[in-house]
Length: 90
Image 1 (cartoon, rainbow, N blue to C red):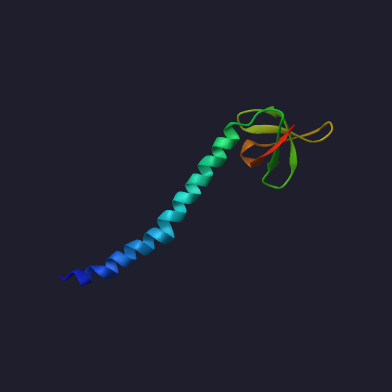
Image 2: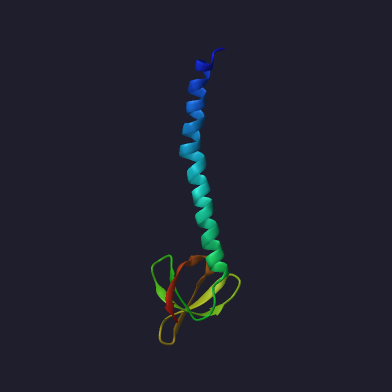
């Protein structure tokens, strides 16, 4: 076998890495960052849940969040539904 016989195999490995492995690593990195943010939630933080509803965290449990979306209106949502934390104080 000549070195030229290994070029298609090397190209296949590069394409596999670029199309499969690299995007999978990026998704894992994003998931880890999201999970870290959800674990650091505190009452009083302004957040947006994945459906686009904004509110202020009033209560926290292991699995749920009490989210105040209007004065004296608190809804209970899954902690995993919190998509982002706003920089503005609650």
